[in-house]
Structures are given as structure tokens and as C-alpha cells.
Image: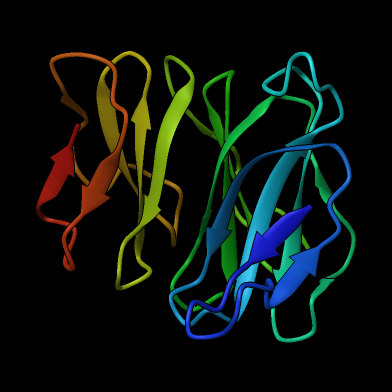
Length: 173
């Protein structure tokens, strides 16, 4: 289960989302209205080759539509600031970008040389920043699925890559 807490209230969760499988990660939009979770059906290998994402309406405490299923081992999830897109990062180096509400693919898979370790949409919703296990950070244009800036290399595996508001500055760890 996924517990969503309202820290201004007593100790009971505000919402409990019933998620099947093993939840690997959850993202919440900046308004606190929507969430997305990724899960695996395999408790022994949660980053294995199965998995799906569920999008949630936190006001209603229920899933939006059917799960988004991919067969590539989900590792990370991000919600675009306008709540129109969802991104799913996979252990085989692909990023799925789809419609938040119906899961339909909106771009061909964004491919990377190694597993995806970080996902972040830009504040202006024009780009997605992707870090990978090989230490590379990629900034993709969401309108055409092409690189917006040249790929940069960190001095090791990227744990997190975060864009500034205009995406011309990115911090990596």
C-alpha cells in the first residue's frame, strides 16, 4: 500500500492507495493532486523485466485508468508540471514518455547507453532531464524527442540530475 500523509492532521494517513506488487518509487505533482507509482510483480527482483505504472488522483484516492505496462524493468517515475505527461525510466536505458491520464505513448522511447538513474521534467515542461548509470546527463526536447543540449558527463554514476527553471543549468550528484 501507498500512504499519503497530511502532516497537519493526526497520525492517520490522509489517503491509502491500494497498489498491487512491490512499489519501487512514487512521484507526486507539485500541487499535491496527482501521483504516479511504479511497481513490480516480483518481490525478489523489483527491478526485473516486468512492471507497470499506476497514475492516481489523490483527491479521490483512486487510480486513473489502466496501469501503464512495460516489459523493461522500471526504476524511476516523474510527472510533468502541467500533469499532462508521465515519464518512466527503465533499467535497459530507455525512457517512456506518455500521456498521464491514458498512458498513451507521446514520443518514441528516449534511449541511453545504460540504465536510467534519474528523471526530472523542467519547470517550463519543455524538457526532460535524464541521468544514467554511465554518468551521462541528457536533456531531451519534449516537442520532438531530440536532444536539446549536448550530453554532459559527470565523474561517476548519476544519482540525481535536477534542472534549474530554464534548463540551461543542471545540478548532478
